[in-house]
Image (cartoon, rainbow, N blue to C red; front, side, top):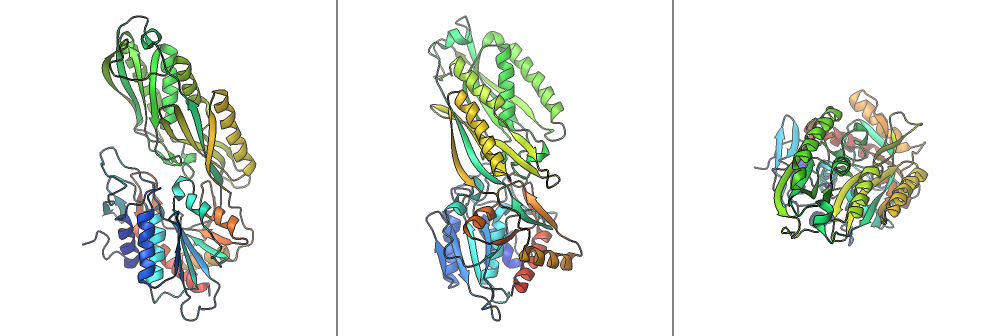
Length: 498
């Protein structure tokens, strides 16, 4: 029996469970895109599938709605693939292991992908139904939203006739999202060079050395837009801070630094591989112990389990028995300087909307390759000039360290629409169904509405969705009752858009 069998709305959860059985992490969406194309073919619905795995499915209006204005239903195919340390899933080939507890759906040891699998499930349930009244539908599923909204940037909208769009990519019931920040992914590249004589730079003696892995762990992480205001620790930045403290106390050799998996997720773990002289071991242990206490105190509210751990192996510094390449001292300093000084977190709050983060950035990915260290940032702002200023800061410091900055996934802000027929209708329906007014919200996170509004003039758009907690983390879970209430809300919107 399926895990979600007989949970209402049954059609929605049937499709959601099928979606969870198909690997669909970012850059791996072809399987789910093909599934949607096959679905359209089986239901004799016209569709367009492009080389980016985007797919548009068309359905005529139901009786009485044949001549109504068409409506776009929109969501994205990809999910953020994060797992707990003890989970060995291969996200490229294996299905998620769903579980239900206390009215919540989650996936064992991994992210759930409710963001945005639930949008796909809602839309497929409507497309297959012969009973749900609705105007002509243009259902748009995009790829790679989580890595820069690449699918939405590439999609051809010329076949779309609608000026009304329901985006189903929000995670808090009762909130109608009507504006969002623009953003860009900025990758700072620091070139590497290496020591010629490792023993002289690390230890004046040809003494044994210790090969170490210093790891930052136990952080909560989270979405780099929605949760950037929570004050949570960034593992990459913490790693840089500790490496600088080590450099101030002793000579050491840096081999590599790595941390984070997604530029739009606050990194939960980061690690450095390094060498110290054997005679510095006791002092090194003392420093790690000292910083464990410092970090535990500073992040006792936001990241109470934060910690540093060390693994070690004895090696021969002079003959380099581990066959490692150690950065030159000058190169190491450039890398640490970048980690410590490149900006991160909230840069400015909005003066117009109370509590709204206006401009921020997140160092989500840190990786060492053969010839460079790359620090990848998700830069966000609802003010274009501030986004440009922040990118300039990254470029200024990176170039001063002999590196360069590359850019991808640039997308525009979705500006607030003062007069919105759709927003007014949805607010009216929500109040009728719940007895409460919805919260009209602007969000400090990228949603695809900005790109579609840029491509489709005069687009009236609102984003909404059910309650999904701790997205982009292995603790992600989706509220079953909220999914059903949001389903009923969606059906009433379609019914009233006659």
